[in-house]
Length: 327
Image (tube, rainbow, N blue to C red; front, side):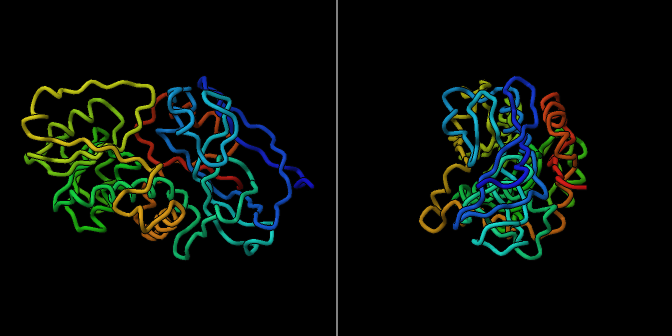
């Protein structure tokens, strides 16, 4: 049995183009739900790479997202930040608001176990930040052994700002944000973070989160590193290679560059938290209205092909681009 009228979904073609396609939906089974999408969010960095076909072949399997259809380089239905309302099935209460790691689609059927309830106090508009918040939460967990009172974040995009926000919220740390986009000053201030004037700061840092996804940013992180500092690398470079000055202070200062990636739960919490539990905790951390400043743009679902094309062309002022599914 099929769901009447099916759904519509966004597909990246992998060559800098995208399109909206019709999707047939089967009726939900006993352990599934049918949900109507309210909002989704574009993951600016990763989805831009997918849109232009920049996921290297060696990572095609590892970079597949839950409920993805198609294969890299494309066409592929890709995305992981959907907020929806339950409209069918018996596994969850009708009308319940959920977050799901589901691609951009007007409605969808998924296992009830993959539908994470949106907590009271978190608006559906803000709940789209959950996937990025989960990445930031994992990064902070990865950095627990290196935590200090003063921390640098190089790259004031979504992941960098949320990571700095959590370091301040959890540890009471003084967090400095290094980013060339001047508008990040206001955003950082709203989140209780310091903006480094013209990228300058007189002191070195023992813990640095790098999230700029640029070679220049990673070089800045190395320049900011104190003796035996740890640099947590959060960026996803895709098919781009970077060159670093590892013949300078890197060895004499005994620096560490450590990868942090959301695909695996941080070792410090791996025995206590699974992926679903980590995502549920990330949702609870969206209870602060100050985080609304991270949503800088909003467009309709039908505009998604143009939205992705614009992000790939360059949109430095954009943080979270939210997609709405109804007027």
